[in-house]
Image (cartoon, rainbow, N blue to C red):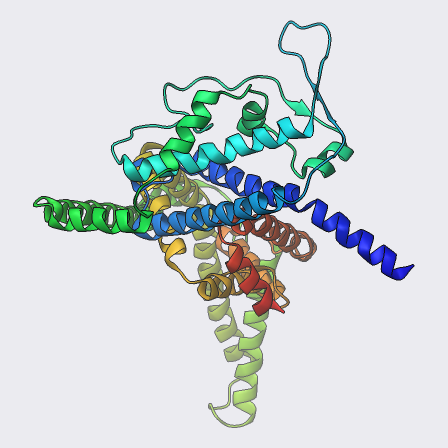
Length: 460
């Protein structure tokens, strides 16, 4: 019985080999189209269609090469197994939502052969697009569905299928892929894709010849120098704007505190009849503790003979003089806290204005940071992520958050509410940790799966 079950499982696995290989190639083609739509505006993955640095372009080219090789390998498996295995799966039903103005649902039934053909058409379009891009480098634009020409709006309908159909097909068709699957096959398009892929010479030889042609081009040196100057200008602009984001708010805060907010606050406090010395009870407790320590230290020094013997009247006079100094110190500290509130608000406004009116510089900084991040190795990316997460959401991070919150409250003259600090520490790092994990799952896992794997290994 066990042997018969094993043979049935093996037979089932072999019979599903063509469909499994085709689905894997189809998923790789969809990944290429996703990169095209998100990073290259629907154009092919090429330096001509994206303003990215060398490291980012090298990463995208590596992803493209990986998915194209996967498509070729899985399609070779599909063709080899397809010639040996006859697929007799049941028919697949798709329920398509009506377009705007339709009254009834349109139900279309297609067989497995048609589904295979649709996936093959998408795969052929992707392969033909990059085969034609290599042989025709002057190509200008390509639509998301792989056909050249003017851009057309995507269809408004979406394809819904049951879980059984999804398991049978291995992938839910949505977006451009669904539009491609719902489009009737065009023989001319498929013939064009096959003719674009057919080359007399291997592609590696053509790429080598093209590289030699570029090296022998008399304008090649000028192009390299021009590209280097553009990269240098963008890097310089990004670093300059980063310095502006740091220096302008600081100068605004100091300038407004010293020349605008400061004189206004001093005049208001000087003109008042009774201005409170302490802004909150904690400042008063600190002042009383400091005065008490001074008196106790003075009496101790008299007892050990470090200072000459003093009468109670002399001790009281010294304590009174110290109290006046403490009062003046905390009066200035309270005024400084009030000045910090308004000057910090103006500094934040200056920072926001820089971000609003210098959008091009913000884009340069984003491209500069992307180039730096993409240029790091997987281990370096994982190291930075672990360092950042452990610092802000790790086991010892509550102590750091407590110091930051207490320093901020002291800077603004606010009472350091322990309940609020503990509540903040109990909630904010958890939210931040959730955001980190979501970013790793949704973004980093898509653009750099090897970095995520290295991160998990280092974290364990």
